[in-house]
Length: 232
Length: 208
Picture 1 (spheres, rainbow over the protein chains, first blue to last red):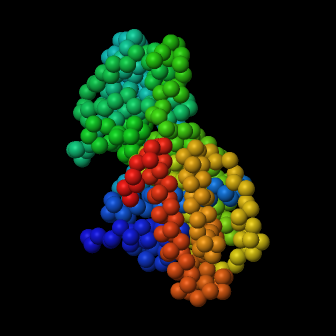
Picture 2 (picture 1 turned 60 degrees about the horizontal axis):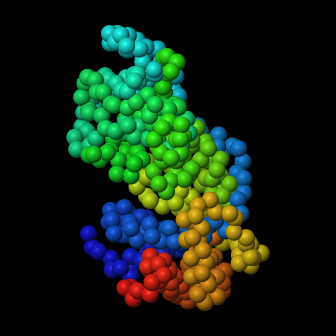
């Protein structure tokens, strides 16, 4: 690709962010900035410099119908269809949708697994097309069992990272999980801050070695709500 | 760390509440996404309304933008911008797309434009955004009045070069020059400010 001079890159990026770059030129620049990392960096620089100017505008409450429309457009049903059709199911499924079915399935899978030790909590992690992929259970005093029910194919050169969603705050990583059938034990104490007040668990696809930012960056492969089994 | 110290200490440094809500949205947490909407929608709606100027169009822009934010929430972790900056850029882009489709004639609220300089800044949620906005304000102050007015009209109202020319009753070429020169002057000032900030209080020679 032909490289723009630094001045040209700045001039285009600035007018793109300002909004005066229009029509086909705007779309062309967008495509270039996606493909060329340097140009993308220049664009982000201008976005970071100019965009906070918008803070000067006094807020105006939008009508409630906007949120209702957004909610219906991100509903699990519609997102599942469009995502499978487009073959790129970036998140977009409700953690809640599994609900009771997941809990029952968890209990079933757990008991049929022949485990005798009682778990503190169990979660079935399902993919966006509602296929159960993993059963995760927390055990006293210090381990979490990740049972892979159905591994993924085509994830070579990527890592699977396990995340916990606390009741509030950012997701926390519990580390990487091998993409293979069978059990993985993760050493984590039941008193560890990362496993307190968990509402859900999820697996995201990350670069080898895990998310570079400490927060999930890749598509969510599966997720599920946590069902308490035994009072801690 | 003991479990009693609470979860807040566990977050990666530099992430605030909005960033956490975006990260949770990336994992499909609809409750977090609803909270994100409640926290940011009024600001973003106002940004869009300025550009598209009709409420139904601003509602459309806001709706499309939030669907986008939900679908691309996992990109945010890589974007490294302040959360409001990231979301505002999405809303501005969508709004500009919409006016390209709908607007024939620019229709500027004269009073709004005249009062642009007097608008009170609302309290920014993020120190990063506040510092950047402050630096930007200072650098905008270094521009000619006409350059500044032209750039502000484009930014807040989404005016194109020809719309700016009509509105300001200036030749198209003059307007384009004001925009281009103004932006480059702004860049020089912002880079100078950045260099000074990164060098602290020492009088190191500028390398730019």
